Length: 211
Image (cartoon, rainbow, N blue to C red; front, side):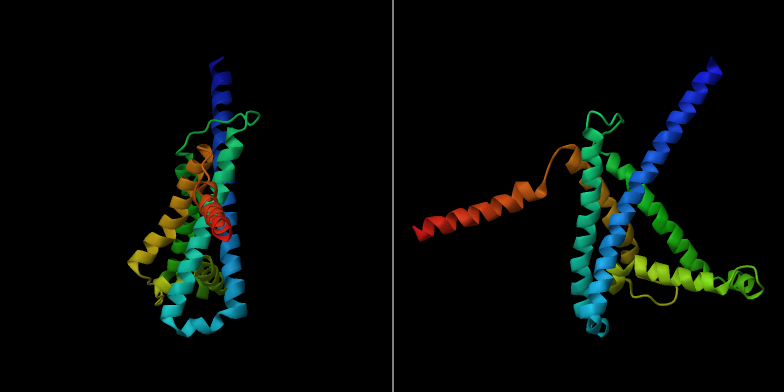
């Protein structure tokens, strides 16, 4: 009997972990969609900004807001799904902060792999056939693409970036996850609460003036 209960408990715990990972990867997916949109727009229309630090800061700042919005929206949708009666799962307002640890873990892995490129012993392993050089090149490329929204603030110099860009890389997606899930769990819509009301009020004032 005890073995059966232990088995059920382990299966339940495994299911919960899988659900957290799955939900966390949804946040990563939305984050990458925002990054892809930024890079495509950059290559099409804003490539000339690369030599202008001020314009790059403005450009990246706008897309940091976009990244926040994409992750926030994904977390809010997950919360609204969790609230549906036929979706029998445990949920609580701060669950988004736990889900946000999945993107944070992925970011940590990418940073570690990126740093390994600059450790001589690992480079020697690649040189003597232990680890192919192209994997290091691929990791460099992936890291730069993944962190592109923060590029203007990172000031990449070899394996060094600014201390505050580390905070931004972790904190912005994490906050978006936590706040987005909280909003979805509380059925709160920033658009309905503020933007829609503001637009409606402006239109209402315009109608009064035309009378």
